[in-house]
Each structure stands twice: as structure tokens, then as C-alpha cells.
Length: 401
Ligand SMILES: C[S@@+](CC[C@H](N)C(=O)[O-])C[C@H]1O[C@@H](n2cnc3c(N)ncnc32)[C@H](O)[C@@H]1O
Image (cartoon, rainbow, N blue to C red):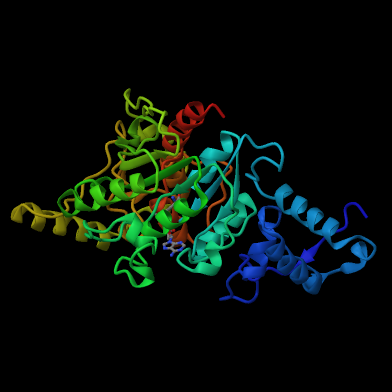
């Protein structure tokens, strides 16, 4: 039976002829099979039985065994499958997973991802391509939250920053102990994290957000976050860190580390040192189509001049190759204005997706999305992996894992 191919059609897969189809819940359940509770495993098993093509090789096998073989095959065909069951040092969940910047870093530290959630189809495709798992969708949905395994060690989330200024709200109210589910803050993504953390009580919450989370709404937003995390029984350590000593990119982000154990006095690792130089991370030969057009270059110059005269807004400048680049953002694909590489006797060029992957510290074997626009957006949204690795290492040491 060994070597028999399990051919299961997967809807959201890149290259699937059903062009606009997304991955189904059942397909997603299958890739998380070993971490699921019995009931969800039964749903995955039924789907597997019903959709298995080329059954010949498996006729005599127990379905359970066939599923395990299917999972082994998936893992064998992706560059970053992570540790196998039983080999992990710790477990974590990957919320707002994007393309798995947290996952990449924590897997390398020996962690096993037992649940991931991301609702964007293209990001799910990139995730699947690299780690084998298909992330579950909308995390605000109760039926998705129910699938999170009861026990895991670390909750990771680079959650989108939505405006909220409910300085008066308490975790107690929010969790329905007093006001029930019609609370005005319901639906804010940070509160979903609170709900999940309060229910599952992992050892650590490892959160990331934009730099100005700290100053948003005069500090009210951040104060609410800190207070609510403490109210559900966690300590709270935070720091703004610039990634430029780890990757060739100025990227300042707020990191929040919260422990269940009040005895742990966490200290962030040191991010001092020499900044990385962009020139050491550029590809040697880049096709001409990355060079920006005359129209776009002239537009940049005109807009910059206008803004300079007014003293407001963005002014374009060529990247200094001896320094880190500006922060890469999701909209970079539009005109590359955050980082334009100077070229001899030509208009400047945009970074390639591979160079953006390097700016975020993803390994060379990381597979990016075939749509250039999606690839740029995904790297712009992601975390700088080496920063997460360095903080993650310190977390693991603090927990003595
Ligand atoms: C800032 S990005 C996080 C990127 C990630 N840390 C990485 O390394 O790639 C936030 C992600 O949350 C996803 N997202 C937003 N709302 C969501 C929801 N309700 N359920 C699941 N994912 C969601 C977005 O599609 C986006 O990819």
C-alpha cells in the first residue's frame, strides 16, 4: 500500500480549475486532523471518504490510516512542515496568520502549530504552499473558535488595529459575565483574542501591532488592551522594537508579551547593533519589468515637489543602499514609493517579491504567491520573522520549555 497516491481535490488550491473557489471547511479540518476533537475528526473523516479519488490503493486500509498517509504526503511536499506530533517542544496557535511569520519563527524554535486562522484566500494559499495546513476562516465566528484545541502553550496574533476607544470596558463585562453578548465592543478583533485567551488560558500571549497602537486615541486604546489582558489573569510586558538590526528594513512595531505565571519577569532581548544594509539583500539580476515607467517616475517627482512646497505629505526619494529600507507596507505593489532602488542611466526599480521576503527575514526557500500583487501585499502585512524568533527564544527560555 505504501506509496499509493491520495488524490483529494482541494478547492482553493492554486491551479485548481474552479477558479474562484475557496478552500472548504472540511479540507481545512483535514489538514488540522490530529489536533481536532473527536466530533470534528468525524466530519473530516467523512469528507475524506466521500472525496477520495483513486481509492484503489486504499481499498483495504482503514480510513484512519489513509488519512495519516495523506497528511504525511502533504508534509513531504512543503518546505516548512514543522515538527511532527510528539516531537514538539511546545504548541501554539496562529491567529490572523497572514503568511505565517509567527509560525515560521516559532516552528524553528521547536513549536508545533495546532490551529491557524486567516480569512483571505490568497494568504491561505501561500500558507498552504509553505506549511501544508489550510488556515480556518473568520475567527469572529463561534463555529471556528470552537475548533481551537483546549490546550496549547502560546497564542500568537498580529491582529489588525481597529479603532476603539472604549476606555470604560472591562474584560468581565465583555466576557458576558454582566452585560451579555450585545456589548458595543463585540466584534472588535482584539476582544476575540481576549475571549479565546480567557477560555483556553495558554501560558503566553504573544501579540504584535503597529507602532502607534501605543499612542492611539491619546493612549486610551493601549491602556484598555493592557487592562483587559491583566483582568483575564495575565501579566503584561510591551516594547516598541525596530527590526533594522535583524533585517534591512526600518520597521517599528509594538510587541506585547503576556504571561499566565505572575512570577515571570520578562525582559525583551536586545535589539541594539548595526543596522542591516539594503545592498546586501538585493538580487543580482532583476528583469526590466521591475523598472518603473517614465509616467510613474515623473508622477512621483511632481507629487513630491508639491508636497515639499506645502510642507506636508510624502516625498519620494531613492533608497540609500547602505542603509535599511523604509517600512514595506501592503500597498507597496501600487507604485513602490516606500523603496525604489536606484539604477544607472534608468528610472529606479521596485523591489522584487523575493527581495521583500528577505526584508521580512523569510528563508530563501519560502514560496511566495504567484500573483505579484498578492505576494507584495502579503509581505507588506507580515511580521519581520527574525524579530519574532529573537523574542520567541526569550519567551521559551522564560518558560523553561
Ligand atoms: C497584519 S496581518 C497579520 C500578518 C501575519 N502576522 C504574518 O506574519 O503574515 C492581519 C491578518 O488578519 C487577517 N484577518 C483580518 N480579520 C480576520 C478575521 N476576522 N478572521 C481571520 N483573519 C482575519 C487579514 O486577512 C490579515 O492577513
